[in-house]
Length: 123
Ligand code: HEC
Image (cartoon, rainbow, N blue to C red; front, side, top):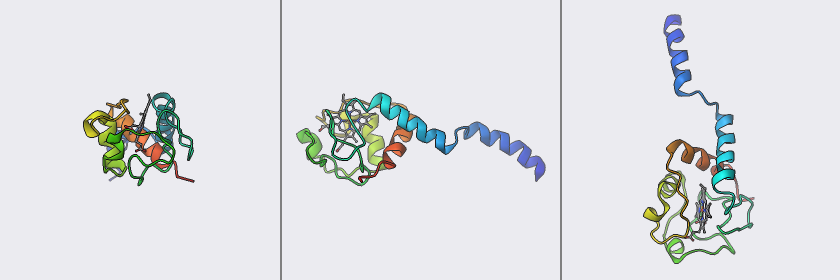
């Protein structure tokens, strides 16, 4: 058993080298770099894009006071981890005609951003 652990622990370290807290920091940093020009995570504070506080569980196109395309308003989506992952991969492919054009092609970075957004509650 000991011998097995000696082999397994270094290997698992290879696959999971980043502690959860560092992943959160990464999501925050990515959000600042890629999204914060147009989005805040403060409830009610819309920029060029709608605020993204309390996004998980929110129906698409419904942030109060934000300007949306018809495409987004009538998309019928509710944001969860899966729909956000698909949307951020290629926004215009999921919501044809959306004015949000910024894609995050890297799956690890998408996951970090979505996790960060999941932590930004509506209050
Ligand atoms: C250049 C400005 C800009 C950037 C940068 C940007 N967005 Fe957007 N985003 C928008 C606009 C504008 C909309 C509204 C789109 C529409 O109505 O079709 C939007 C909509 C969204 C929505 C739908 C929100 C809702 O209320 O339904 C999500 C989710 C979103 N963006 C996430 C992101 C993420 C995550 C990033 C960073 C990776 C990002 N956006 C970067 C402009 C931007």
